[in-house]
Length: 368
Image 1 (cartoon, helix red, strand yellow):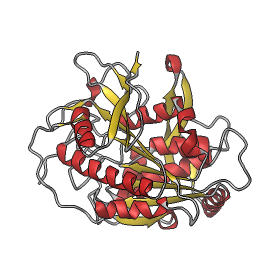
Image 2 (cartoon, helix red, strand yellow):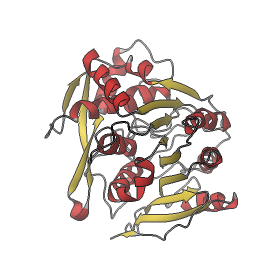
Image 3 (spheres, one colour):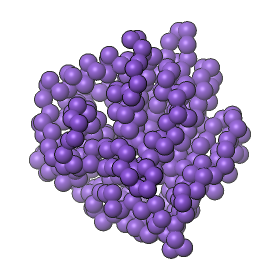
Image 4 (cartoon, one colour):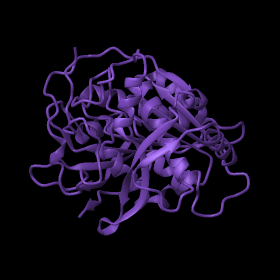
């Protein structure tokens, strides 16, 4: 059996106190075992209604704060409590995909079995903070017809920020007939989509109408709440899709049909990803899939851009930013570090990469 990767969360989720812009020590060590060539899991497309039907009647949540200058909270995102996921799994009569301990123990990643989606990774918070700080740069995507894809979404913190702070509840008045937005959330494990991704969408929708919601609590999930979400998505012309399974050409094909959004106008594509290049195998599959999706988008006349959050080096397994950028440039594309935090000598530097098929990219911005 494949050796697990341990990133040091010890079975608990990331909280505000864990995210230190100047220190990556909490990441721990990644298993140094050689990574085997693993079989792939066929990708599958999941509809919103099917996943909504699996929700429990009550969901417990906590709140993650995005922070701006001087560490001041600037936005809040609700996410499902891990203990609530445990409770649902224990209440169910078996889990055909994986045991109730996978993803909730000290093993953060079991390659090709569980890819870490139940927990919030530092990179996803970095990426959400970056989106918040650079929202003006994303206007070309958010104000026009487009597809937003989060690869390795898990708890989906970056997409939740865009969905609830800009798309569903825009800060400025919007046209009566808004341009279509397709949002695709993808994770290796379908159970992660069921247990974390979709519950987090429901939580943030339910709390959006409250001016000062409690930092922790429970949300009752009933038919009226689910129908209200469906109606609001339809009103804003937002279409949610979900994909599970391995990154592959088949995966890219499932994601790509929605890129050609109409007969007369093809949309742009914004791809988000966090902690997806932690090993050579993962980085290779991610690079190929990313290139495939972006090529299809631009082949349809759209613009494409990807923002990838990662650690500079993943000690022990060979993954890292330099290797990814080298592979990305070898296929004729462009990439640049646009943000990084400088950790102490014993810590791990975290980065955000802006990768494109064609464009001029800026240089690195340090987070001081």
